[in-house]
Length: 105
Image (cartoon, rainbow, N blue to C red):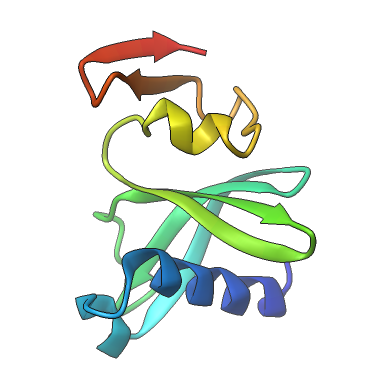
């Protein structure tokens, strides 16, 4: 993972959160946990690299561009990870039916 990748992931994260996000004015860092062939599970750390109490994110690199597909504490929605063929190893569970059914992928 290069510094350029980390910067692109932060930009993708800000795009995912949208223009009204309070993250826009924060110092953000990427801490990645697992990386597999263009797919990433990690954390966006706010305000310093020693912060460990943050939700995780999932990102996919498609045609050279990083896309954040989920950010939260729980399993992602199935449509988020299935839409990017996310590896089961990085997202083994997902929510189906508007969060009413947990599915093992």
